[in-house]
Length: 356
Image (cartoon, rainbow, N blue to C red; front, side, top):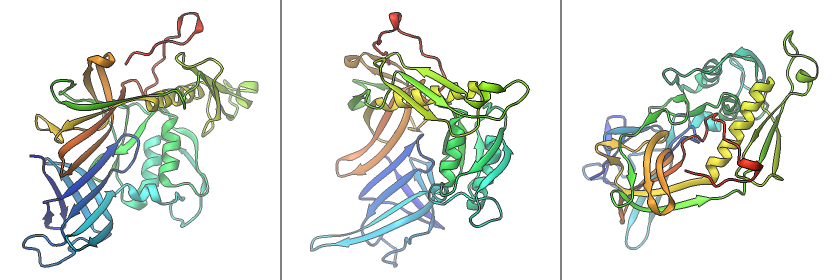
């Protein structure tokens, strides 16, 4: 039986009537929503959980969220009463709060040359959010000049630079951020029809995809990078599975060389491809063989009717518990999404049938 415990101070709360926990590689902060009766057995306080409380959510013995209670909502009618508690990771503060230069309350602008980890730590420090870098991850050279755009949040600023390095910025589950690549870990279990897959839904669309992506930018001249290259650099990436007339032109987020712009174009292509091709799989429980299902893990997926028999990337995990039981909704995408891996061109330049 799956177990969820919300720990606040020295008190542990369980026995939830309804529970939803969402964890994803596309968000810096995980979130939970819990429903319970107004009073717990042995607890004299009718509403012992208060908004702003620091909390830890533990699923099947594994810490999934470390943050704060954002909201509580009490309801009753003639037959019942309930209390709903919602919260997010500690990184919620960087998602909500405006970015600012250190030591100021509102100033933005240039921050100078910084590496991605240094920028992340500088922006997150005022919010008590630690930043870790995945083991062995090469983040490249420091950016020539980092800056904060007026009005953008800490998360928007950080994610803007992370995109240029094809780096995921995601919750580490214990109140901090993790800088990592897609599919850094592998789940030893598998998702297989006839074994643990209870239901599945395939989403396949080209609505937000393009055949050609052109990233435009402008960078400072150097001895090796000057003239027209520096004044109007550009990088392109192609998606041979889309009609050739569909073109997406966009401005890159920062000063960049042509090589970096090509990487940025490839990142845009791969992310849009991944968002347009996913499978949502429902399994019983929250764990497999004692291991909690986690986002950003590669996992074998076998669904014969759709021709899927390959490793895929877990993008999102939604854990639920209600009157219908305990289950996990696991969204998987092609494993090369978010990674800068060249796609083979189609023969003759036409569209191709994509394999999972």
